[in-house]
Length: 564
Image 1 (cartoon, rainbow, N blue to C red):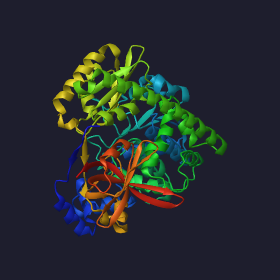
Image 2: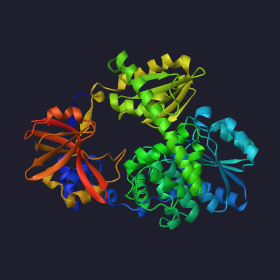
Image 3: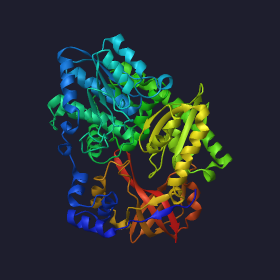
Image 4: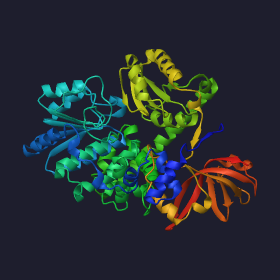
């Protein structure tokens, strides 16, 4: 791996002032300023925010109309259809709204399209389901903001449509009875970062108690909100931060049989579930169902009795194992293509594909390639003359904007600045590739492509005491928008020879002015040659917390180092 550029904090004084005003450790004040949180009021809300700090759901345009229509459907015993997406955010949005509507006495059902056969989103042909099932009201979750033709056809069939989504719209908004989407310019909602589960939570909040924030019943939905928000890689700031933090606390005691079985299968045991457990264990198993073409399985898990739940979890385990094998194969093939063809040196935007790549998995591989080569990546699976793509981007290059400017080539597309999906004719792929690379060449500098380690604060080993760690925990949960803080300890002594764990990990001890800490370098066994016992290094690291038999261990997770 090429040497990284260390990016140091620009203004340590602002962090120092904040730390003094709120009686925080200096390094914590500097971390907050690096997050753009420089005034005491915002910092206090970031560190200590509660459900009372959530916004009134009725601030969102369309909420009153949506609530009124749902209540009327309940009173009239109309059939309600929830239309969802097949990823974790969409599946859990379906689960949440289905439970809430049925608890209110509604006659509600759901539909999730098959990822492989039908692709993403609500299409006009899906309107025929309404006639078949006698549906009077459709509520979309985590999708629908571009379902213009479907909405028109639904109106012709006599069904009303309520759209709840968090994606950006196309040129025309659907003529739905209500559109709940915080990213819309006219939404009126102060927080634009909600995931699909977050928008559904606001609807449930309004439906159940008119917007009161302390309802115990509404708080039951915080667990799926936390899982869906983390799985969708939504920014963990603003309301998302509060919802996820509260939901993670709720996951310490899970009453839902299916979710409890899933957590047990992940090997988490009785310890507290954290955001890493969701991102790397729970979400991939739920996502495997939709990626492999059976999203209905994940929905059923949350309504299943114990024996069926155990069987579903076992199937999810098998699907996830298949997904992992496919992912490893595609990643190896893609890396070979990039390296053999020298694509990293030729292009700032990697666009490649294969007819053998699984359409439901290329998005995960695109994310791994993006991290490996530090540039946007768009992978395609070719099938029946069509190219089905999934892409991931780097900071500063919004991928959805890129597709907007190249939409003349695309049959359909959607997503976020950092993650997109699209479909186009395979024959148009060369000109599409040329167009997106022209945009990337103009907007991504050579410096943007260099690996950077962004240091939040300098920290002496002696400063890592109980008070510091207690304040550090207030920064949790970490994710997009609130990344794990990176610290720099300068001129630390390597206390003895390094050890190699499992032939790939590195472990060594460091000392500084009487304080010592264990350092773990994941997949960095090759760095052992850079360490001389009693030699000195500048160490860049984050914190790694582990628990075994009820005992917590805190290590320094190595990000980078420079020999002195």
